[in-house]
Each structure stands twice: as C-alpha cells, then as structure tokens.
Length: 520
Image (tube, rainbow, N blue to C red):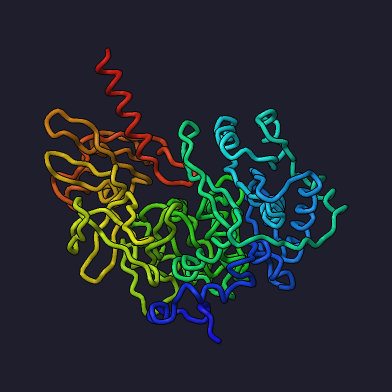
C-alpha cells in the first residue's frame, strides 16, 4: 500500500493526503507511541549516519542510529536509577553533540519530559525557565555548570567521563509511553525579562509534525538533510531533528557560533541534498562571498522564521540552482503555509509564503472578520477546532491563491494616514548593494503621527550621501511616502535567540530615548 512519502507532486499531495495516513509512517499508534523509539531505536540497523554535527571549531562528529539507540537507553536507565519518573522534567542545555542527542532521546525513552534550553542563555534566563518548569535535573557542560550552580535542580556535567560511565547500564530500554503523555517542553524565543510560556508537546505531536516535514521541508526517505538552527528552538528541534530522524533520514546539525563558510563547506563535504534554514542563515551565506568556492548537491531548500529578502532569494537561486521555499507558521499553531519543496508541479513565487498545507484552511481577514479580496492586506487566520485562530501576522493573497507576509501586526507603520509594511521597506533597503542588514520601525512624529526610521548594517561609513542613496532606492522601488526619513547606521541589529530581527527591542529603545528627552 502506498504511503504519503511515495508522493512528491503538489497534485498528489492534494489528492492523497489524509491525517489517517500519517500514522502509516510510524510504529506506534494512538494509544502507545514514543518519540525516541520512532526517531532512533527503530532505525538502529541502518548503516547510514543518524547525525552529522558540523562544529564551528573542530572536526565533524558522525553519529550512528545504533550507537545513539544504545547510549540513550543507558541514559534512560541512569535517570531511573536517580529516581526520575514519568512526567519529571529534565532540562538539557547543550549544543548539538553526542551528549545532547543521548540526553534528549534518553529522557523521552524513560517517560520523562525533555526541556531543551538555548546555550547562550545566562543564569537569569535559565533560572526563569527552571523556576517555571521545575526540572529534577539539568544536563549541561562544565562551563555552564559553574555558572548555574545553585540555580535549583541537580546539575549533571555531560562530559566524556559521564558518557563513559553510562556503560555500566544496559544498552537496551523498552520505551513504553502513552501517545498523549508529555514528551517535550519548548520555550519560544524571548528576552530574559519576558518569559514566553512553555509550549507542551505530547509524543503523538511527532505524527502531526509530519505534515510540515512532507510539504514544508519536502522530506523524503533517501534525503541527506541539514538544518543549522539550534535545536533549542522549534525549527531546529522539530523540523531539523525529530521529523527527519523519524523517517530514518540522515540529518546535519551545526554546533557553536555560526560561520557561513563552515556550513557551505559542509554542504559540499557531506553532499547534503536538502536544507532548511532561517532567512538570516541564507543572508549570511550571501554576505560571506564564499559560496562560489564550493560545489553542491542540494535539490530542496526551505526557510522559515521571517520573510527572506528578494536579493537573498535571488542569490539562493543563482548559487544552488533552486528556488528557496517558504515555510510559514508559529510555535503555537504549527506550520500552515508551505511551498512544497521537491514538487515539480508547484510554481514557487518569489516573496510568497506559498499555499496552505493539504487539508488546511487559511484566510486573510479584515478588522470585522470578513475575508479580504486579493491584494488587500488583513490578518492571517487559520481554521482550527471550529473557529478562526489569529496568527497575529498580517498578509494578503494574490489572484492565484498564494499568500504573502505583511509583517507582524505590531510592525505596521502608519504615517500621515498611509499604512506601510516594515518588511517591504526593509526589502527595498536591502536592494542597495552596500547594505548588509536592515530593520525598519515607526517612530513618533508630531506632524505625521509616525515616520519610518531604518537601522542599517553596512561596511561603508554612514554619511549624508549614503543616506540619500538608501532613501532614493526605497522611493524608486516602493513609493515616495514610504522612504525612511530617519536612518541610523549600526554595527548589528538586535535579534531573538532564534535569529530573527527583534524590532520590538528597537521600538523600546526609541521610546526610552524619547521619554528621556521629554523628561529632560
């Protein structure tokens, strides 16, 4: 009987998809299912690598399904010996590595809940999350262990000695969890002062995830897939790690400070055929100038997190010979719009978010909750459980049913009655060949209500002449009223830990400056 992985075309996806068929891709069922078994243990006999870790410093690390199955089983026994029980939380603060995968999968095998934490969080950021989820154990490296001493849970240093000590435990562990039992807590990106609520995932979430895997990243058995996003975040964890491993696919991960040339070299060295990355990663590859030095085997490319600017999209097409495909969603609602990588009959429109996932319903609504006509901007909403759920993002459709991102609802700039998109303004600014990164926000203006202020990262000294050049680029590409009346040349833009430009930080800074000037 055919499985969903046997189909690659857009037409077949629409004709053959059903939620029921997703279960054919797994050993488990609606009653009993375990993510660690689905991702690691059932593929233990495969000769292909499970994980290839590309390190910012040092040699690549190649890990097999069999060795991870055994080591994670030993870790599960270790947790049981410590009194960790089903439902207990185990926080894991490690870069992609043997220790990371052993800890994550071993925790879920034992029926405990894995809580991956971003490695660049300081003590305050970690304590907020620890206080929220109350883990019994925190697994990290020696450097972090010193910083986190006394923060709450017992701290385990997952070094070579610890991993060697696991040999005293049995190499097999029978995972037996209810499909609806909790498996993972995931914190969305945020500042240390603003704790985002943990998104709680059950073991059966791996089944629903396959919709995004099949149609958002185009995963199929036989791919060699790499995702350089941190597995502390949804993209790196669910789309970059769990989904491909559950299909028995070799994955690539990146550990350490991101270096675009290290990634480009790894694409050639390991002959990866499928990549899913943040828009920022592609932009950094473009800015590095290193792409022409290597040869690639990529057949499918996707991005998520934020819109990709048109110059970078053109770079991807020229460098890799394929259009980069958008995958849009949020941690809370999942992926809802995709561009079907690998589907020869799906036309990828540059700048678009694609079309809804098979059987999905997405619409653009006006302020009264009515569907917008094509080319009219409104709020993106998805139909779930008998009602329309707001994504808090703006968007529009075209006459062919493709969706386009209009920015976050709070990223809209209204100046002298004109409604403008920060995303479109940034894209226009990035057309200037000497601009590396850009962000646009609205700042108060006594005459117009708001005016556009742009923050620009460039290697060229910022002066009045450069400002006029940037303003002219926007005038020519958008309209005369949308150009940034104010510009600030900066060395870097604030970003969320997931790599997205954090316009909220810029707005908060501007408000603080305005408030200080008013007070003084």
